[in-house]
Length: 317
Image (tube, rainbow, N blue to C red; front, top):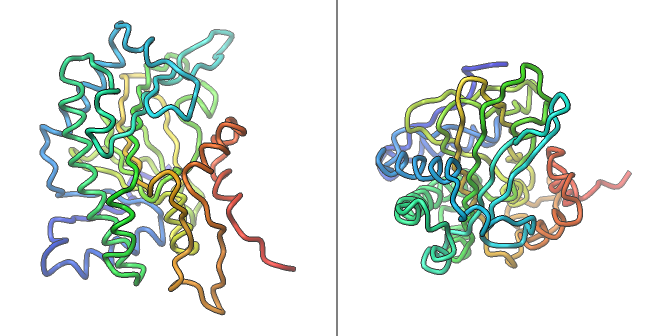
């Protein structure tokens, strides 16, 4: 496992004279890795850790909020779930999971947990800040593809933001199954931004096929290329395959923000990236298609690229 090969991109000059260089670095990371860390963003540390604290407090609480939001229905816009697994003959909680839609905030925030008391305020502030960052990063990504920074801007303004919070209890066993934590998978998004309380997130290097442990740099954020960016780029940028390993020393919490077009908006290969030499490689799809796929093939979500593979257009023999 490598510890040092994850690209780190300083985006402090993204709106200034350094933009061309930063856009180039972002494009290189998306093309070669599918993931990178963002440093020197503008989100205050108090906002990041405020959200992390209320997420931890929610997972640690014994309130009826969890029971009220508990559901196996993946279509619900707000739901809490516990993933369990048998470990050495004992049923153990693998992770806690809380999902809620976040954009537009005023449409969804009343459905979020009301406890802890500051949850909605602090997570709401975080979701707004992280979305602004996501839009800036997506502009740079579209620019790096030669599509222009305004490509899909109107659709993204009306797009969907899904917050997925994960709580990982201590793992007391020395040899849990490889899936204990979060098995290898890619995301159903254009991009995903992750903030974690402690190390555990591992990225699959697409060239060496080795796992890289994401370094825990204070207040840094990790950006993943999602399935729909792979489609838009016609395969120039591949979805990031990643997993989470549990920690024997401490609990771990992560906040994942997934950004995509609206639930019924079709995502397709950018026309500019289709040529005689690079024919269209993916079928159109939307988020509702993914949710339908997941509800029918729930187990397959944990098979790395199960969904994106269904969108690939097979070449004629």
